[in-house]
Amino acid sequence: MEFKTQKELFEHVWETRPHVSEISGLPLYPKGDMLHYHQYLHVLSKGAYPQYKLRLENIMLATPSEHQNQEQYEVFRNKRDELKEQYYKEFNVNTMKL
Image 1 (cartoon, rainbow, N blue to C red):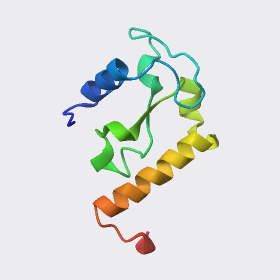
Image 2 (image 1 turned 60 degrees about the horizontal axis):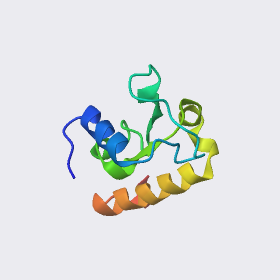
Image 3 (image 1 turned 90 degrees about the vertical axis):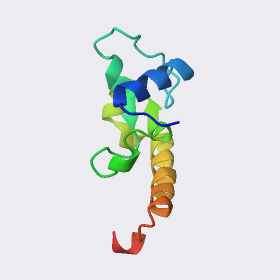
Image 4 (image 1 turned 120 degrees about the vertical axis):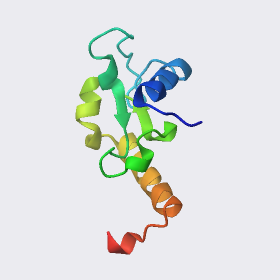
């Protein structure tokens, strides 16, 4: 599925996934809450991996606190490593040069 905007991507994630953190299982803030958009975590950063900015598989739902401290969670690190490998294969990036 292709998305044109981040808002469109986030809305799809919210409509299709349980409203709990994929890291801890804690409940998330509902739509309309000022912290709602702080719960969408880009596993691969938008700046370093712009081609993955609007990829469904690059989004995890997390509490705002988990989002800020993402590197401390093994589930996040595993997903990040998996996506990096996928990215490097897809875009034929030689990891030896990185």
